[in-house]
Length: 398
Image (cartoon, rainbow, N blue to C red; front, side):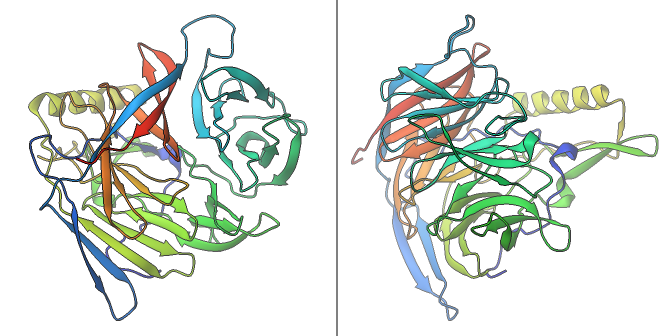
């Protein structure tokens, strides 16, 4: 695999991995300048290194709420059991995968319910423990039909089943990172030829044809919890740096987590672009430290096990959280927030240029689900209610 500084320790099965750190992000303090100037170097290998310096403030963008979907009770389509995934469609649709109901609900450009795709079951076109969804280049809605070991595609306008293919991978990552690349090939996760977990690119028959190592946190941050001689689970140190990745049209983007350093990597293993961003650290407060230590103790007690050691809480939070490549090949980088701050993302262009940053208008634990053109979809639990919010992205100049 090309490139240096990319964390490539192999993935452990999700059932054994409990992450204690909260991944909602903010970027630059309103009173501090953020990165804006890009200096590029080309290495002998051809890899471009873009260094974004903190000499100018990037443009601040605004999120204006278009609609929200989610109510606490009733039997309508706006009552969600579990928002497993959300995608924005090319014609203004919002597709919401309800994992508990095992169906995809389609809403129009203003949030009006249109139709439901699929139903629970094990037969053709039926869903069982669906893990995520994505759209192909024709706008068909593909669901990772995990419980049925299939990929199932639906026509978004009629709900008809377009295609189904057997899925060979034996595990799934949450949130599911599946997406189609520029050649129309699906990127998923699964086992490589040696039986190790990897990022997979599938061929036209939906069989693995290319693999990359699955980025995971350093084992030095992992705490094993045993009950007698039996391993019952593992956990990471609170606020341990974790690498993040997102599929793109030409490969994947990997963020190191511990450092604000991002790599665009092709499926030939070559690193095409590295972006390094200068950013201020966010400190862990005393109340946050107490909270995560309490959460760890509750986890241990619920497991009935004994940890091999106590967690180590750092003074500062990781450099960044999850990342997302949108359909314009812009990279959205979530930053861990200071206490009491709303989630915020930096937005980087395809060549490493810093094009803007945006903050949610509310303080809430939110997951960035989808960005298409100038619309942004997030999911959150609001007063215990699973909710999807769609925003218009209004670009500013400063």
